[in-house]
Amino acid sequence: MHGFIPPKRYFPYLTWTEIQAMSDKENTVIIQPIGAIEQHGPHLPIAVDAAIGVGVLGKALSQLEETVPTYALPPLYYGKSNEHWHFPGTITLSAQTLLTTIKEVAQSIYRSGFRKFVLMNSHGGQPQIMEIAARDLHQESGDFLVFPFFIGRVPNIANELLSQKELEMGIHAGDAETSIMLALLPEQVKMERAVCEYPPELPPESLLSVEGQLPFAWTTKDLSRSGVIGDATTATREKGDRLLASLAEGLVRVIRDVYQFKMPELK
Ligand SMILES: [Zn+2]
Image (cartoon, rainbow, N blue to C red; front, top):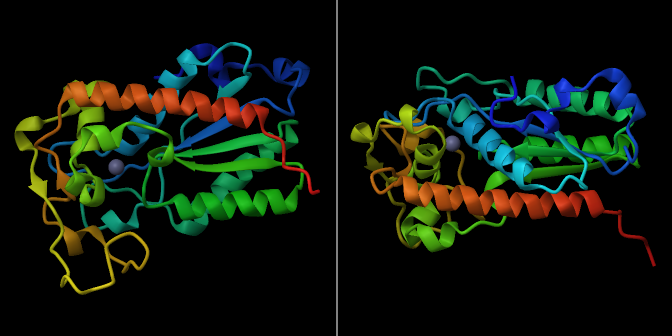
């Protein structure tokens, strides 16, 4: 059941008596991986976001020192993927359902005595939900420290490995995701079907953009015929191995920080 997660870090393998007897529950880090099951172009499986999230987390947990108590919950495979609605295979929860699910899981973890909860999200369409959940949970219980993380913001070396255009526009099923999948689950990648498709450009004087400071709402079919937004053809396993290693290393540092974290005191 544990998949990429090292068995000794997999929360569901514990017994209730072990959980009850745990020392330092206040600082023990409980991580909820949250992915998505959604189209990723003609060359990648719909599991990509869930696979990358759990893959990076598993690698990080296998490197993390034993002295940092940390457990992964079972991955939440489904996310809010309605931007990919028009492509078959995409499964989506509503924002409300995802928010409620995350909050009810978090409240159960709080009730078990834990006070540090990480939302480890790996789908670019839902960081907002994580942020709302985290704020609400901390407002409801002031001693509950909740961390709404998105995998793309964990320190990594993507800017050394990807082209400038890909860093800006390669937001879905492009070089980065395809390379990481070649490293994680190579037999599930159909490179012969990989394409390059960037969204149509806006007039150069426009202040608006697909993402960034002044975005417009879109669904994937507004931007892409293939479902790819980026260049999947330049992906390599070597790049994927390096990206994965740097993300795992970055995540280890982040987990250590969460373990050490105290809410800053007012002067
Ligand atoms: Zn993705």
